[in-house]
Image 1 (cartoon, each protein chain N blue to C red):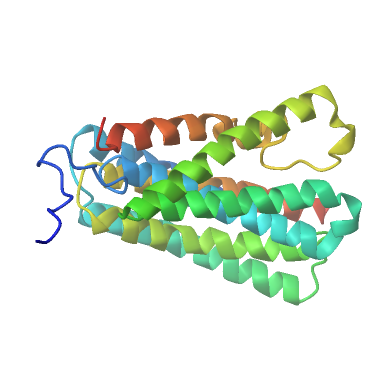
Image 2 (cartoon, rainbow over the protein chains, first blue to last red; image 1 turned 30 degrees about the vertical axis):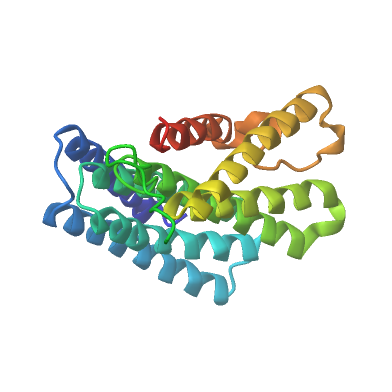
Length: 121
Length: 143
């Protein structure tokens, strides 16, 4: 979608997911590092979403615009909810909850890429 | 005299489905609830006439995932019954729709979350209800 930013988003998603799984294996509840990692990942997603929305409303034509905008919304909403849910019960499984959110968000970004490319042949 | 407490001896209490690894299961169900419902909403709103049956099935699948999420996240016996019902329905749904779409794709011009046993979603929709039923059984009082 937005070249470099998209790659950064995948890397961040993978890093957050792996760290979440790592702390589950090490039997540690989510801590400050998870919050920072999710915060950085979320910042990348928000920047990507803002740029994409601006482009869509300033002339970029997409064949499935409503689907694109809904996926964009989903891509920024999942991680804050996942982090909240993961830290509400501080057990080892919080890390895996964060990992599930990161993987789901990564798939949403991938879908965004397909929808974006469809509009640019 | 008042009815004796219906409580079971400690240790025989059903364990909350929303604790420990159950939270991971709820997270997966929530993501499927979100994506299936959002996808169906767009399909129904923008191109319903193209494949009404498939899009209504998409919507139904989304609602089933929402109910399963609510059921698993709650702590009352009613929530547990809701979770049993929704997850069992989900299992039947993915098996029936999966089989129908494998035998004849003609009636399903657009993929639903359950088409070809959830191939479009990495077959997670096929595995998820088995894990859900196992978790409900494992956390139940008799387990």
